[in-house]
Amino acid sequence: MNLTQFLTIFISAVFIYNVILSRFLGLCSFIAISKETKPALAMSLSVMFVTTMSSIITWFIYRFLLIPFNLTYLRTISFILVIATFVQLVEMIIRKIAPPLYRFFGIYLPLITVNCAVLGVAVLNSDMFFTNNKAVTGSFYYSVFQGICVGLGYTLAMLLMSGIRERLDYCDVPEAVKEFPLAFIIASIMSLSFLGFNGFKF
Image 1 (cartoon, helix red, strand yellow):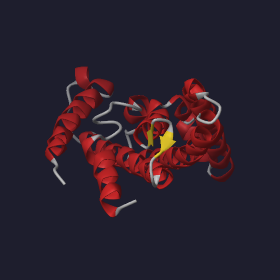
Image 2 (cartoon, helix red, strand yellow; image 1 turned 30 degrees about the horizontal axis):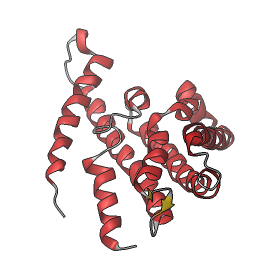
Image 3 (cartoon, rainbow, N blue to C red; image 1 turned 135 degrees about the horizontal axis):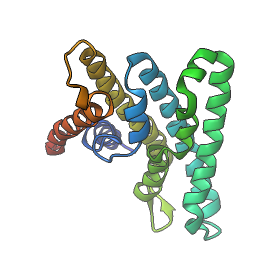
């Protein structure tokens, strides 16, 4: 383990390979929930919790169950089961603690279960931090940190998008491009701007 690797993971996950703006995963919630900052932040924190916890559990499953028993071909389905479990946990907590927020999310909260951004983190961890079916040194810590950083990248994209869309409510926007068409245009421009981070060298 070294500090440079953690820095590399942070910059890569948040800026260079942002899960939404570079990898284009999790676009459903990105477009649907990013109309206002408060629900966008709440959704981002939920996704960050799920990505972090699923990174922890999927590492143990991959390291101590799938690899020893030569079941790595079951990686995708086992990861989906873990993610679905934690999404149900988040859903129950939000329903108990903040019923208005639960009602606001509606169908989009259960959709974290099929959010490919969360599954993408788990798969990426197993691809990056395991070599020849062996965990690289510090792979557990790298996996957990990458789960957090992907959540931070998701949060950054959501907050940027929600801030822009809130300001556009005060602008005279042509009727033909209101709501989703304009959201996709903004997302495209944001994605192009994040391409500038590809030149990072460290």
